[in-house]
Length: 101
Image (cartoon, rainbow, N blue to C red; front, side):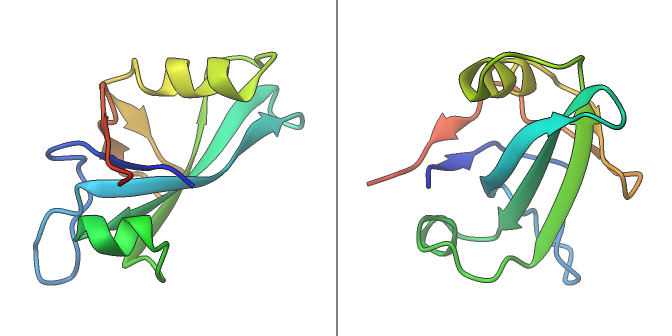
């Protein structure tokens, strides 16, 4: 699974530290809502994200209409500077930097 870095994603841990590393364990189509959907797991460190440890925060977001491929969904997701999660957070995943070793 690929890990990414985006400074100031908008998600923090309980101690107030930015969780700027993330992975996308699930992405696909939400046929009930007629949208694409994504689960994003957020991490404090690059190592934790790459090793896919238990995340300190995880969010789900619906975005854009249905798309034909996972790559198209990721491209759309990574072009958005504001995404509202189902928990009500607004996150920014625009132009993340891949972090895999």
